[in-house]
Length: 304
Image 1 (cartoon, rainbow, N blue to C red):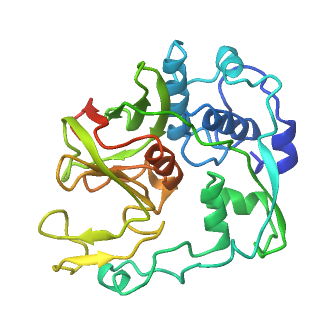
Image 2 (tube, rainbow, N blue to C red; image 1 turned 60 degrees about the vertical axis):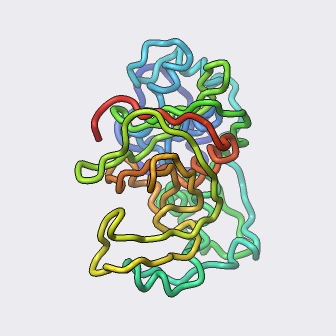
């Protein structure tokens, strides 16, 4: 199947049935509509993959539908598909977009600890995160673009962040998603996540948010968490979206555990965390604006 073009995405029509296998223009449309509905598909990339299917199930659950994760006419209508606003938009790159970038970052924590920031390493990476997109998809969509200031490119139009006051969070380990609820019990947002691993599982039971840090530093302590490479001493890594906890840390009452961002948003369903709950940076930022100290965080389902 051909790579979706901006024109194909603009012209895409839902004609019934499941989303096509692989990558498609209509899948891009559905991912953007899910994002606008507060049900994050993770990275917008046009693929009918596990993250998109889990987002469809979350949306169906919230809307009281049969939660099979399969696109159908009822879901299309509930998403506002008929007559939806354009899901793509033009964006002109600014000088600010090209400022404050980091050079290629080493993997070794001791080397990272010597830097001033762990920033984006390219304009494309920065804009992909801003518009909730997979970086490769952004580049493919703008084939031939140099991503230089003054250049106009095509990006997704995911819409404004969800604005609500979250009273309770569920970390759903069995489906690897995080659901946020307001005081009335309505699910206001739902995000794909990486939740623990076999060696370092996420906690169980109920805990609380104790603090929220935007653009946090990261303290590496091999005696408390995990061992990275040959590093056996405590290290403080500088802030930045490409740090181990991304651009947000939501601290939990369970010591050393938190909900945080990630430097690799496309790997959420393909990798494991060191016990914490990892979201895309943009989803973690959105959640951080809706929570405060004392919000309940309940880990449910599964053992990992």
